[in-house]
Length: 253
Image (cartoon, rainbow, N blue to C red; front, side):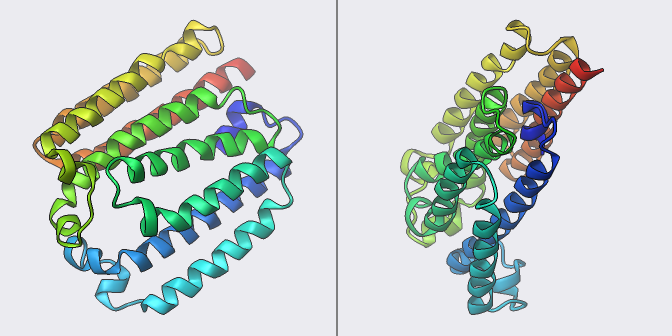
């Protein structure tokens, strides 16, 4: 919805609503299949999750994921071609993330980062405008990449026991956290661009700078408390998305 609003919904409210529901269903499908593939790792890293706890069977999670994927595909076919292309790429990425890419240093992180960033592009594509949400998608993607690395540091023990080769395992936790920090600083450097180009005004700049501060602090905290840091990152990413909403709203007023 944020991507569609930033792009300018206009008369395409129905298409924006379909895009929102499609995204929610697709993310649910991706989370369910991720829980299915990650059930042995979660038994070590997060034993309170549904499958390790015994509340949901692996087979049940798999079939639930398939059902949601089918619904997501059906909804996607009602959207414009650009949105369909993004959705097809994303659905393949959701299925292959845990089974193929998660254990590869940085590749799994990059795929998740793309998926998060592309949700804003998907909203824009649904209402026929991909240009305006591009910066938002880039910022969301780079911030997610940094957060995913911090989360890999948090999950280091379980990932190592399962034989995964995540970035912290491949190059060490501190070096991986520096990669996350540098990546975030790139996003911070790009974040004022909509203001500098005159797309959005001072209200956008104020909120996005606050988001930058929160996420920079989260990166620093990642060296001491990765669990707290990756949670704090969510607040910064929410503020970054809010900055674009505020920026767009200030134009409409």
